[in-house]
Image (cartoon, rainbow, N blue to C red):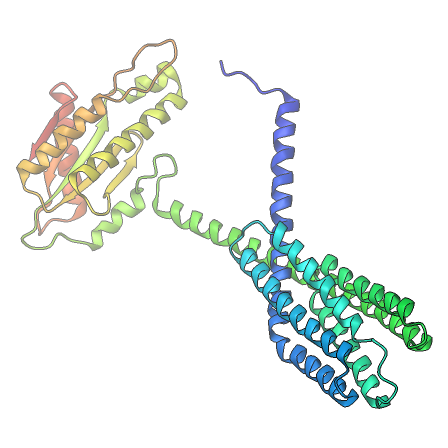
Length: 396
């Protein structure tokens, strides 16, 4: 008797499988969301470069003060670093690799982005035009909004960027108390909060869209699998995996070509009912499966291209051989008979159950129908049984 699994172990196994499936689904949703987000980030490259150009123009209008030039250089370096980090993260997700370090690197890159954008709020020179300062504030808010919305599905890097931006503004206010306008800083803080709220809502929308996409894909895969299974069952025997009777009688449409030798083998397992009666139908099914396996193996050894073997019903099988003469077909049948006789079904406590087969061999003549050759091969099989079973009988 088989040992029964403890109910707690069964529940734990099912629970582990369910958790693994949930984690896989969560990963797929995250993957789709991030890939879509990074695709948008790549498409927004022109807008990012436009924002960088506005900052450069504003600094030029100021007369290119040294601190602002350093700040714009740092901003350009941060931009390149962020682009590299985003591209690497996209590559890892597409390859389904380990995303831990790429996500950490992107987080660092986004924190640097926020800091370099905050540095653009350095106090302008006293001689600078008011318009240049407004251009910087407008460009910074535009870039912040663009990046935050683009990275909406990555709350960590997004919030790291916004937090580092506010922290940099606070540091600048501490070191340059006379050069910072409290009203502008307050407006900037409120703008960052608004950007955070808006991007978070956008992130929820992106995740929801990714969930729908993954669900639709899973449903499509399940439907495709069901259709493939239904198609399989339409012409395969579900127990042995061999072709079924329906597929066999499609051979009516494929008459033997003139001049090519074709043979039909009718294979019937001997005393199969006795095996079922003594050991049960489960053992009988194992015998059928094992017989189908040796038929497939013998056909492969014979060099058959599409393994033309069929379960005709019950314990009877049909094999169609193409391109061989009578002697070759006879050798194949004898080898198959010996293979079946070597089957060991492994019956516990009952020793070895002998499995043999009687095989009827008939040549399929060019002017002969499938029904005719099947009838002749069946007669040859009955002749083999009448002569003592476990043998091959051939008719011309």
